[in-house]
Image (cartoon, rainbow, N blue to C red; front, side, top):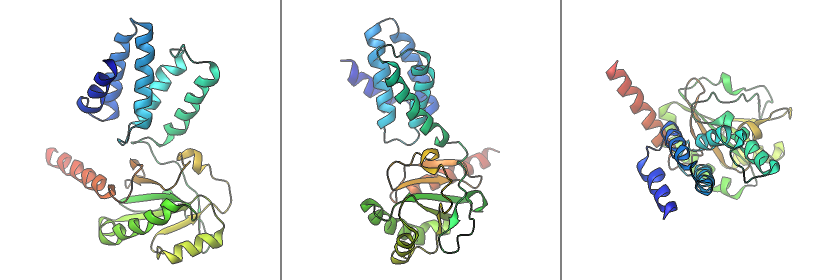
Length: 245
């Protein structure tokens, strides 16, 4: 009885933005405290729903729940090792939630090995793509991203900052040549001193972030099918703000 109602409320009724979901979660959890097992199930369900959601930005809800409940001793059914796993996951997500400044990436050009840091890319939008030359999904997704770039993203002022997270330099260069993506800013961690995997939660590839002109994260977990939608939505928001102003 209870689970379908949670699902209906949080996934169909509450506005799917972190602030709204966080407020609704806090309200439900405050009421659920009257019953020990109901509270346990509610917190578990909300955490799992946020962590596995395909709605962009719901990872911020997961961080909120961990910081305000798990880390404060409310998950009484978990031992310290299990709680530590939740804390570790939240710490990896927290730096790259929507609205945060993109973590620094001080990387090098794959051809010249000259520094090409992310914060020096001057562009209305920057698409940061983490990929691997041996990743089967990357081999399918990158050509589609490049097609989208040539057809629509380039006109929107998008710069693609391409970051391979594994593979030797020769294989990376061959991949770039084969897929004709030399128009992208192709970089590599030549000095092996970047915490990019942790800072950007890159534990599978491809992983795509969209940044605005100030290098603020406005999209994550994207692919070729929805990047343009996020940009159009962002432009619509700015246009409406301008009209109100």
